[in-house]
Amino acid sequence: MKKYLSSQQFQNWIAEINKRNFLKNNFLFIVVVILPFFILTFYYLFIASDKYLSEAKVVVKHTGPPSPTFTLSAFFGSSPATREDAMHLQEYILSYDMLDYLDKKFNLKKIYQDRNIDFFQRLPSDATHEEFLKYYRKYIVNVEFDDMSGILTIKVYAFNPELAKKINEAILEQSERYINAISHKIAREQMDFIEKELLYASQKMQTAKNKLISFQDKYKIIDPTQEAQAAILRKAQLETQLATLEAQLKTLLTYLSEESFQVQALKSQIKALKDQIEVEKSKIAGGGDTKLNKIAAEYLNLKLDVDFSTDVYKATLSALETTRVDASRKLKNLVIISSPNLPDEALYPRKAYNLTLATVLLLMFYGILKIIIGIIKEHRI
Image 1 (cartoon, rainbow, N blue to C red):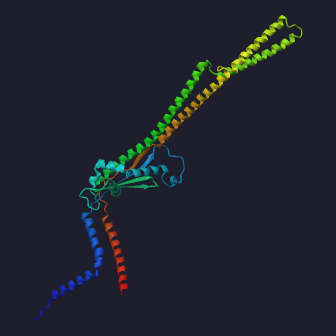
Image 2: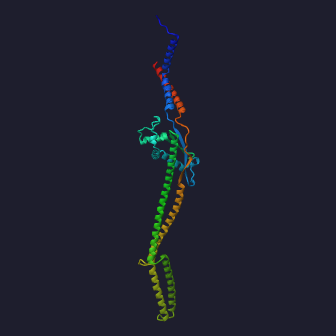
Image 3: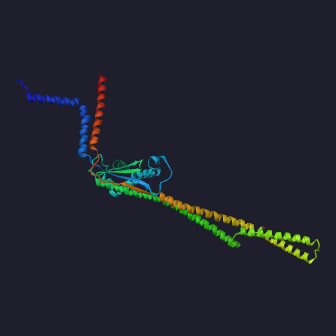
């Protein structure tokens, strides 16, 4: 006896066949698009940990007046000095030093290794220091520089809003210490150098003066050049008197004998003048070390040393004042334009955006696979 299917059973059988045909015909679409989409949706809705963003904006400013030098970069945006300082600060914020400071302050490594954080965003428990730094730069802190305004934007990501704000505040505090330490160190090094030079110039000037005073005390002469000039003047005057007396002697001898009292007296005066002239000559020049020409030459050397060392001291003293002004101009301050905010909601991960982007990419991949499979089938035929 034949057994017939009821109407309901027949409909179920047809539905099962259609279902199998649908799964068979759309297997690639389900595997490539539907399944990954549902996995991503499940991850973002039930597994992914929410991340909060705290943002701050700062700029490095010099305390002194701006440099009068015109540059093209300064016309279109920040000055070269501002850009350089901002770049240095950016590198410092992303450095091992800042990471070690934050880790010591907040036990950062342990916080981001928490089991409550989803696997894909969690720092591995066996992460090395280098891996921790990569994680820090990729998932915790991001620093952006605006070349037009010279503003640094510091972004901190954390899995609770209070921690994100605290980390950002700690970064700002340490950055301010870094900027102050660097600028004061440069200014202090410049001042230390010029002060040492000033001390050296002062000691050298005093040594030269002491040598000159010892020289004057030794020869009992304040200025040998003046003494030499006075001796030369006296010699010239004596020679003038001698010439006058010799002329008078010649005149007397025209009408008096050499044995006359007047002639003898005049000859005595002439001899005395000649002796005095020889004495003055011996004072001015001669073979001894006490002659005025040698004393004056030594004096001039000592005086030249005193004058030169005095000029060096004056120049160094002027350089000290200039350096003090330049050092004060080079002092820098970290100006906080926008303080770290306390986020109200989690901005990351961007679930809707990520799912939409993933869907588009999956569909594109599916389309490429369909084209490749179609080409393969045509070549088989």
